[in-house]
Image 1 (tube, rainbow, N blue to C red):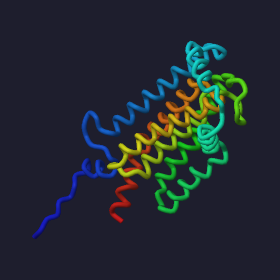
Image 2: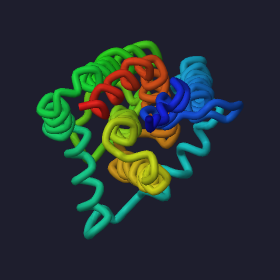
Image 3: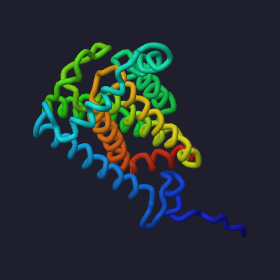
Image 4: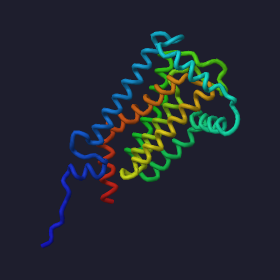
Length: 236
């Protein structure tokens, strides 16, 4: 009689979640990275809230904003305006399309993870920080803006979304390239917000850190459910 080898539970978990036992397991790395990003964003928020008119790094923010003085024309301006659309209410078509795709694939736990991170992050984390810190924006922004400069909602959404896409849509073998693209995309978004004088540089740094932290920590929380979902898909 021929016996087929059935992988151990730990091996199955590794295959479905991209994790493996050990000190530097991806799940542990995600947790520690998320906590570190959240702590860094919290420190920046604390420093700004202590003196919103002139935080300790306001000099750096002023110098960076001076470098972003323009002229605001040509290709850089077109890129900045495109990214402004991406993070504006009209850009909701992107996450909606991803949510519809997850629903079409019947990946219900993935859809819950995606919706919790995107809606909870944008509506809770960003708005709580904006009202708690209440920092004034740079003078004369080139686009329409809402209340509060800190943190950058565009940078937050960009970092959050690339982590969610990496977690739910990008195969493990290709995630290295995806993370490289993600860093470039988020940095470009951060540049665009300062280029348009919509945010101080520190607003965008904190926004990107908070967005990535939100996605990473919720990824860790949903990992058992995502692993169960992936195992069911594999068996089907």
